[in-house]
Image (cartoon, rainbow, N blue to C red; front, top):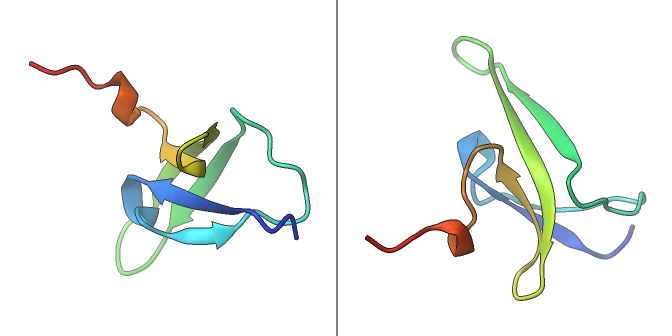
Length: 72
C-alpha cells in the first residue's frame, strides 16, 4: 500500500474514502464505476487529481473543482 487515501466527490461514491493501492497514483487517470444495485445500470467516471490542501481526490467527470466555481 502507498499509505495514501483518496476521497470521492460527486455521483454514487460521493464522500467515500479508500486506500489508493500499491500502484503509484497518476493525476488525470480515470476510473469507471458501475452501479447495479436495485435498478438500472448506472455508469460513472471519476478523474484522479492531487490538491496540496486536501490530498488525492477522485472527482466525478464534469463536476467542477471548488476553485473553478465563480461567484455570481
